[in-house]
Image 1: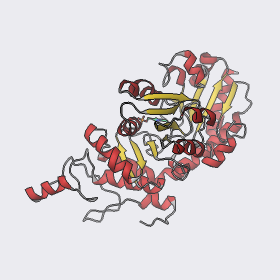
Image 2: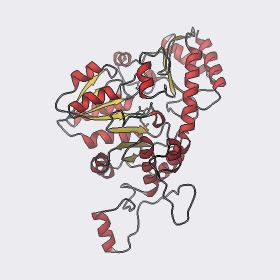
Image 3: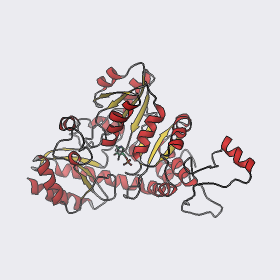
Image 4: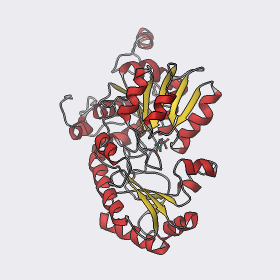
Length: 394
Ligand SMILES: *Cc1c(COP(=O)(O)O)cnc(C)c1O
């Protein structure tokens, strides 16, 4: 591979390892273990297994390695560790890096499971977490201390689509020696320049845009060779959250088409957000690519596009939202995102159900909020579907 290749070329070729048969499509090495030629060879592998040598699939596997090298090349990271799910990546990165007594500053607007890890789990192991409004640099500055070990945020929050300034927070964190960990799912690898902007660790749920077709769960942790092989890998390989070779193969093939898919989804998302703006059935439409989004300038600077998810605040609260959801003919009601199929989610009663009402409101999760993940269907069909469903509410 050449470092000068453009992303589309890397997405198709980076990381490819061919067996002696010269297969065109990447092979699935569906094997748990690897045979050693002798007892001495086995002993040697456990002392130092090189980049092209494997011991056990929980530690690494040729198909998984291909996925790790391809996504690392795309993201501009030195290295990557693939995980069983996005949450294995989020919880694995945090627990690999942190220990009892450490202090973390986190944005409070997070995906439900991320919030559970930060709010409930880390505290049980003696990690102190301070929550801030991720959009407010003054709050980050006030909360980051000399002894802060790491900061964590979703660059675009799920589901309220609040955007955190990566460069701004990274400057504040690095001034105090804290690591910057970013859950970058909503930005997608296609629009990410997170490492250039100051990230130390970037995390994706590969379940979303990388698979992009609703088949498998997966995740990935990206960073320097030091962090990935020195800190993340020892933790992940011994605790068991590794990606399966079959999943890695699905994700490799997903990366080949991700750029085309995500760009089409982003174009439709912008067209839909514009088409519904001002509709009588809506309290508000929130989309980072709309000029009306309060952080439009930051979005353009940081990602250059608004992403594949639109947030619709439907009139009439929960009742209005349910009427809207039940009237859809193309969009389906489910809770994934980044899929080829357009998927609608009502966070207040599903992904964020467990939160108290006051906390939901604080996170922008109103009773009428619908998270609208734009798929690959015809844009005109999607616009017609949403408008007719909104007409049922208005
Ligand atoms: C979906 C999601 C996750 C979790 O990913 P899984 O693959 O479902 O475990 C984490 N963070 C964000 C922002 C997500 O959207």
